[in-house]
Length: 451
Image 1 (cartoon, rainbow, N blue to C red):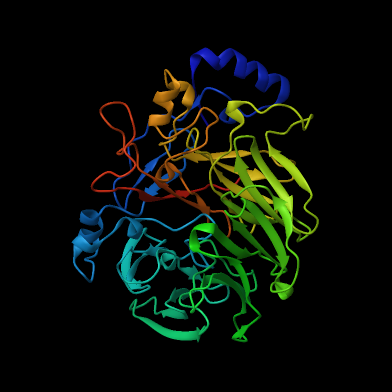
Image 2: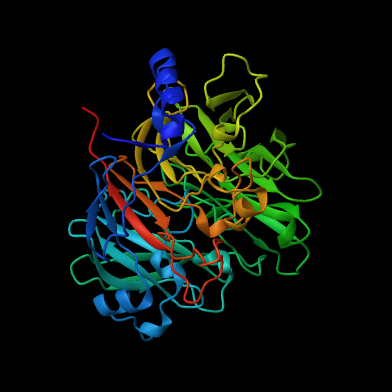
């Protein structure tokens, strides 16, 4: 494996690596080797890793030429070419197919076949008038050809025939007390056994936002809980993989991340685990205990849900009071790797790197690729130049679409991420967060197992 380093930093990085065993890919001055965007439905070999990088999602013209959209190729939206959030694995249980998010304002999602990386079908998603967070689709945890979505105040189960790609949908359950329901406001997921799920949405009487713990196979709604007065005050809710807990994040009256037992969600006193709201994911350690893993300008951290025990994951500090450095930044999305207990996939917005990380600190962090739209603020000549690229001096992203938002398949064999390959860069040296047409492609890395 080769790395391209800023020459000015090379002696320092080399000395640190020799002295402390630091991976150069995580240090200051790291730059990914330049690589053009892969052609749609084709791959390039990453010069830094040797892994194949495919581009599954394309723009409307590309995707429509490969498979015409039911409503016309002009109806293909940005979301059709992406997945939703890191916490939502885009691949199904046996890793044969991949789903995009539902197209914004369009009742379809793109379906790719992993064997040959081809766009094979447009499958049903929520109707155009539904809430934006109802663009999230979830693969079933038990059946390889079943996915779920929400529409209005109903939970919908969809079954795909992988031979014909015909899809049958059924209303699984309806929640009459809600005006609409979502999968935890777009960041929900099933427990690993597929039995538990947390829905969130607005009450029918418009008197607040509620979370709804739900046991899927029994079609049993547990007592619901009010979590906010209005949408802007609430961010997300989800159950952890064990199904023991619900974690929820709120913006007002104060930014907080809280945990409550799943079975007592309506009555239990929430326990504060984080004085912040961050993109994150749940990781089960080798003992089966769930942790919330998140990144910020101080690095990557993990909190055990059972007792709120916290640990620093990256960087590994001997002194917990040590001041963070700019290059420690781990801002970005975190995704669980289910078949690798204790491991997560990290998207670093600062330099675009994608890393497999052991939250125990025991395993060696592995660099697996780069979104190639990260921008180290040190490259900018001044603070204003850095901000034009949507990255603060601490490495925090201020332009959301630049995040790689990497997600892992269950086994860790595939990593999915979003990249614009710098098509949003402006001639003036800045970054356009809302270009026309928008492009943010869904990419796939085929990861070679460790030897």
